[in-house]
Length: 219
Image (cartoon, rainbow, N blue to C red):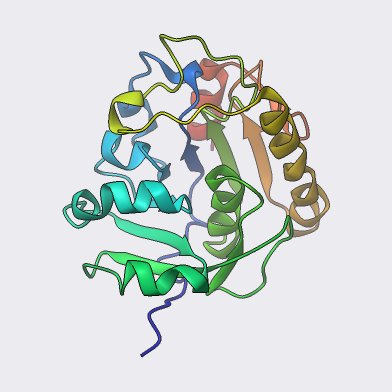
């Protein structure tokens, strides 16, 4: 039995999409400000925004950690799973979870049943938006600068049983991977705004959190 599904309807081309990551720039942020837009919650944010349109992740240790919790999430959850991990994970544990085939590399998939990981769930999340036909995407919590202190590794560190430190050079490398989206999104008329002025992802227009929220609700 094929345990993989696809990213399909409902599409998100009718209003902007907020993609919410775990960066510490969101400490104290009120997610209610995102109401009225489509929302894709990445990894731990799935539990912060239970009313999100969908959740996404590709981190297999986190999937194993959260497997039972994800069964109770009301949102559709897409999780990108490599084929060599299926024997360990088994099939999706509930109907709200859709497995997507995870491919290695920093490319853009044209197969709605597969995404390239690009090193992080944040990278993969933009392919979810692409398949959902998003036209304006605002990134929240996509810091990628690695400049974390002990009090704010992520804005939602409480969801992570095991804290995994990453070298700042890894974050800088992963931030560079987003460059591949620029020509593809330009061709498709997809606008991306990064609501973290200090973000290491520099290939998209950066702005303040407040301006990001405003862009999300601009008609």
